[in-house]
Image (spheres, rainbow, N blue to C red):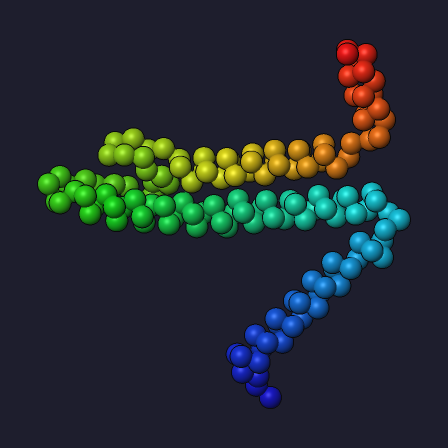
Amino acid sequence: MALSTATIKVVTTIAIFVLTLLASLLPYKLRASKRFLSICNVLAGGIFLGAGLCHLLADSVEQFNEYYEDEHHHHDDDDHDHDHDPQQLTHGGDDSHFPWPFVMMGIGFLATLFVELIAHQLTHKTPSDDKKNETVQNSQT
């Protein structure tokens, strides 16, 4: 019995949804093992980072090059014959080549890191830290 493509897509979508639901409920079941959950969190972060660097960044570079080539040839008006190496990863002007997709990826990564650091500082502040700050402020006044 041959299944149609639409049937396979529906079954796969339902299977992915069920697996995602079960995986999201796993931390409630394993609440006692914080070390195991921490290791799983690091593993998931590594998978997302790897996917971003291996797949999304390569696509971004390719689309950036296509956009640049379209814009560059549109503004040339065929006055100058420019031969660009199709293997070049990035462009920044007529003769300069700047890695814009890589810089934007780095800025996004650092912005996410800073937001996470700030959130960690705000959520993991201990009550003793608040008392120390109050004591320092009271002694200064």
